Every structure is written in C-alpha cells, then in structure tokens.
Image 1: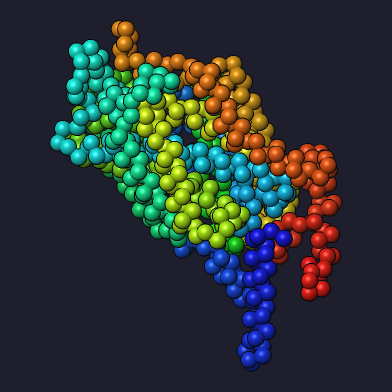
Image 2: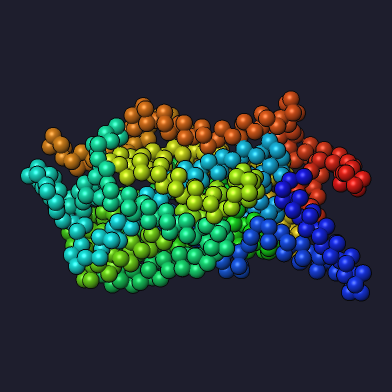
Length: 611
C-alpha cells in the first residue's frame, strides 16, 4: 500500500482501538462521523494542514496571481485587439484553465499527497508526471527569484528624494553618456542594474548589488516556507492581500493622471479583426495556462492539506476568477500610467513591450514624472515583490512536499532543514543570474524549461484522470468530497477538450521553435554606432542547453512508463485499453482513498487478516 494509504489505515486502526477502549471503560462507542473526524485529525497531524479555509484560498490565489498578471496580460491584451482579446481569453479559461485547475485541486485533495504520489497511486507508470513537475518547479524557483531580487534593488533605489531611474550617472565615457541620452531609463536598466554583457557568451561583468538582493529574497522566502503550510499559511495573510491594496492605490493615482485615458483607450479599444489571427488564440491559451500555475504540482500540494470534505469545485472557481479579474484590473493600472508617460513625451504606449521592459523601464520612467515619485515607486515595487514571493514560495512548496513528506527522500531529516538546503543550493546556483548574462539566462529558461515541458505534463495529467483513473471514478471521488458530482462539462473537458487543446498548443509551439530559434534582447551599448539593444537568436550552444532543460523535465515520464510497463502490458493498458480495460484488473476503493489491484484484496497479511 502507498504511504498515504498506510497512514490512513493506521489512523483508522487507532480509531478502532480507541473505540474498543471506550467500550471497555463504559463510554459510548464512536459513531461513523466521529470516527471519520478522529481519522482526519490523525492524518492532519502527520502531514500538517492549513489553519483554515481562508489560508488555503489566499495561498492558491497568491500562487496563481504573479508578475505575469501585471506585466504580461495587459501587454497581450493591448497587442491582440484590446477588449476583443478578452473573447479568446475567457473562452480558453472555460475550456482549458478552469477544468485543469479543478482537476489538480481535486486530485490533491482526494489522494492527500504531493504530485509524485498522487499520480503513482493512479498507476505506477504515471509517477514520472510528478517527478517532472518537481523538476520544472525547481527550475522555476531557480530563476524566478532573481526577478524578485531586481524588484528589491529598485525598491531600495526608491528610498531617495530624486529617483535615479532616468539619470546618466556614474563614471561614463563620452560615448556611453551619448548612448544613455538616447533612452535613459533603458540604459539605467541594462548598464547600472544588470551590468549586462554584450552577449550570452560574455561572462565578464557581475552585479554584487543583485547578489545581496538575491540572498535577501531567499531568506524571506525560507521564512515563509520553513514550517510548510503552517508558516506559509500565516504569511499569505499579508503577501496575498497587500498587493491588492497597492494595486488599488495605484489605480486611483493612475486614472487621475493627465493623459491616463490615452493608455486606457489603447488597452480596451476592441479590434475584432485581430481575432482572425491564430497567434491571438495561441497567446490567450498559453497566458491562461501559465497564469493559473498549472502543471507545476503546487496546486496539488496545497490541496492535499485541506480537509477531505471540502467543496473543491467552488475553490477552483474562486481562484480562477480572482486570477483573471486581477489581470484585467491590473491592465487599467499599468496602461493609465503608460498613458501619462506618453502625455509627458517619454514614449508611445504602442512601443512598450512586456516583461522587464514594461516594469523596470517604462513604468519606472513614468513614475519619475509623478509628484511624490519615491512614494509611488515604493508602492509599485512592493507590490511586485509580494506578487513574486507568493508564487515563489508556493512553487517551492510544490517541489518540497512530494520529496520530503510523501516520498521520504531525505529520511527523518526535518522539513525545515531540507527547505534550508533547497534555499541555499538554489541561491548559490542563482548567482549565475547575477552575472552580465543573467537576463539572457532568464530568457533561456523561460523559452525552454517553462514552455513545452509544462504543456506535456499537463497533457499527461488529463490522460491520467480521463483515461486511466477514469472520469466516472473522478466524479465519484469529487462527490464523496463535496457532496455532488462535477458538471458533465468538466468530465468532457478532462477527457477530450482540454487534452485536444494542449496537443494543439504543444504542436504549434514545437513547430515554431524548430523553425525559428527563440530570440533574446542583447545589450549593445551603442557599440559601433548601433542602438542600445538588439533582438537576436540564441546561439547553438545556448539552444542545446535549452533542449537539455526540456529533456530533464519530461524524461521522467517515459522512463517510469518503461520501468513499470510489465513487459509491455502496462503500455497497452495505458495507451490502448483506456479506462474500460483498466477497470478490468484495477478497482476503485473509496474508503482507502487510493487505487489498488483487485487481487490485493484477497491477500493475507502477517496477522492473517484480509487486506
């Protein structure tokens, strides 16, 4: 039997013994409901649990609502037809985002395990899905935290009367000073903050300021997760709510700025002809998918700590809608400020890009033109830091939980020590991103490790539930947890629609990367009379590293299928037999909360009791 099942059985036996002792002492025997409550308390003590439902929802919202909601969605909305982009965006939410979020939360809550054990309980061949999720989560934790470190650096620079974001300060040569004058905010970002080299092969420069901020970011992240959900559950009361306070304050400040309507108009004006472009639908699907943090295993880990009797469908709906609503609302904040920036003559709204170029260049430049600029800069970067921290420690929890608690990979070593080891190790590796090629490495990880692997892992999750575990069994499990079966629409999505969309997105993404290598922005420093930056393709060596990252993330899936194939029988069971043939030799056992072969029920244990 699996670890979670063993714990539950042990707890059940303990409850029975306690019941027998109560009878002997003249007490009334425990009824079924009391037995269930006692069992849940014992399992809760083993794995820990959220303090209450609010902590769980705030943690899930904090995990889903990240930096991409602020600096990627608004840009995509503006780029792909303004208000018209909301049509494919919400269609993808209905048919892809919400069903997959519902699926991951239900799997975690039902199997009471991290991502590795959950899929292994459905079928041993599927263990690689969880290991792949852990691998991707570790990669994300490695480079995502450097973005938080940069936000810390900008925050510290904001504690000055005159913000330095648009100054050509330092010991600049005459040529460098002339280059800086072309775009001061952009030059400050590349030269002063990143200390960027002129290519991904040039490792000469290094930013010690970023090193200090990186260490600080990891210290705060560790404080939030060292006790697991017990500590992160308390942290989210601040980290998941205060960004909304900042966002609300910045909204009222932004819409009252002169020229704000210029940006808002660019953001919301619908251009319905854009809906005929395939790239619009592809970007909408990928934005929904990555915005909800699907495929990383963190949602599964979070859901495994909630009480078994819980309305998982309602939780998924709340988190998904809050996430998407935040994205739309953040767009008004960002583009009102960008409109003010254009009003001041600092640059056209239409010329702004997404990502770091939006947050650290365009918005920083606009903030310097406001009255009381340091205050607004502090609000903005505190908001970014908290949004990043929520996603960072949530993803880290998704990696640590299955390795430490479920697989017992580190034996009896306390989780606090293992988490510290993860933090120190990833912090040391993160020093690579503090070098002059740090921004180029972030782009490399983002283009390869966080793209195709996540799509493939989510696809196998759908296949695992829809075709191996079976949608009928999943519906029964959800009914046992929340009192009602999921809508038929969700079961159809799990089995057909969502896998179909994921296959389509993956194929398009794969073909695009094979036909044209991903590009990155390189800092030229106006060398040879050129511009400050240029967009070029990654060299062959970098592309090989990128594909190695992809293989590291997805290789566990076929490896564990091969190891558990039982001379080919398992492959036929998984790929050909579908849920119907699986049910012939595997039976759903609601009471023990896991899947096990029928023949195991007739085996005898050491005490000659039927298992």
